[in-house]
Length: 357
Image (cartoon, rainbow, N blue to C red; front, side):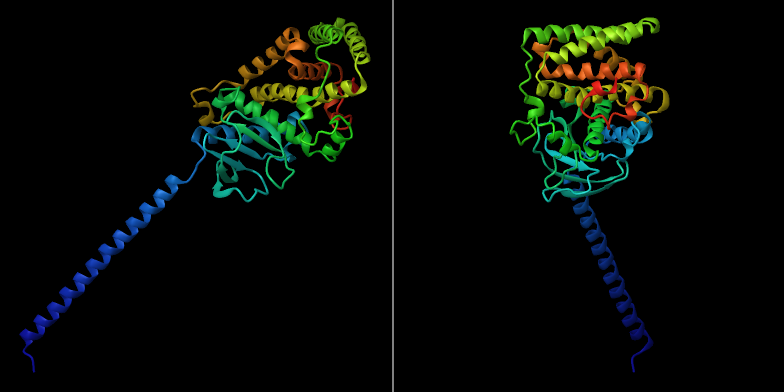
């Protein structure tokens, strides 16, 4: 039989070995967890991410559209608001129900209230357009570069321009929109949609240029005229408009009318959105804190002044299709004075604002 002293020595040795094993196990676990955390952190750091300034801008656009969109256009909130943000290396897709297989899911972004997907960049960083950009889907998607890379340059105009493009999503999502556009028979065999930009309108005909210049001046006069003179100015404008139409071939008139309806009223919507945001919307503190922040009141004034400056100075033969933005927007402003409820008929009398007078 072992002595009590020997037994105590054996127990002490066993206890030492147990403590040593426990210490080594704990150290190994700590090292394993540290390594796993480092690997996970490295993975997150290497994962593409939307720059914070762009997240702030996008969140403001989504928030602004959600809060006041239906006050500008009834039912606007029901339109898709899919966006593809183009950065120098990656494109980030959000609010799109069916991303194509070339996108990788990054996860849910609580600020943007959307799953976010990414892929390597395919579009120019200066891009700014709305069309069914995602393979296998006819949902119109806003494809937009970061503010600094587009012509708008700074945050608040970029947000308002995004709402311009979002209005195109409302247009495009209306029942039978694409079929009705095709029924205009203006593509002349083009299957790419580029006819909307490249249609052979007679911009260089001298008599068309002169009549359009007169028409633009009369339109500005009618908008700015005192109420007592408005009926007279309105009649002068509509007579000149009829004369302008008579100078164009039917397809040429349809094309220009379509552009006034689509792009001109999108510019009008920019102004109305910024104007309403001035009175009915409080921007987030994160957005206001951006270094290039401008008030919506400032952007509303700049947009309004720009409509009239372009209306009175741009020349049809030089600006060509670009004239439709200011001219169509100005017709929207005049309709506000003459037919305050015209927006209710906008999607009924499609593609020709002349039907709304």
